Length: 140
Image (tube, rainbow, N blue to C red; front, top):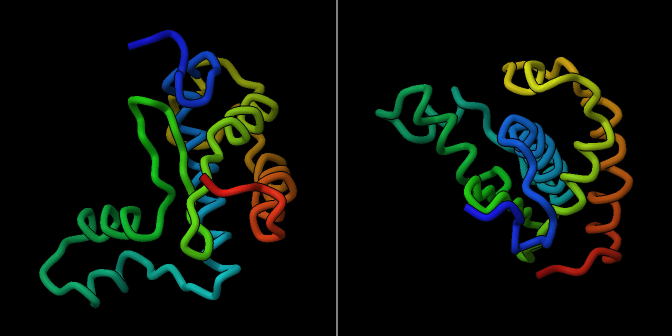
């Protein structure tokens, strides 16, 4: 694996920090779906829609259908809006780096300790979501 992410021309981020990129990418994707008027079903609703699946399968199915496209190996994050795809990797990494203040121990935790998610989400709203919706950010 290269030290650099060839897709976005930046150094790779540590895997623990990329978890935060995933989290913020999912927030962006769900926000874009909401702007389109698409409701993301909860895992229990997914189980009702697809009888026979368990809660883990429902969560995974929800992420597959309604989540950002995340490539963990290449560290890329793609979101969709009105049938167009947007590579937001660079923007997400920059935002996550800006609002991370904890150490690596914080980064591997399940919660957002050491990461100002509220400020990162506000920044993503202004610098990613609004620009996609207004057409300022070009699709792939």
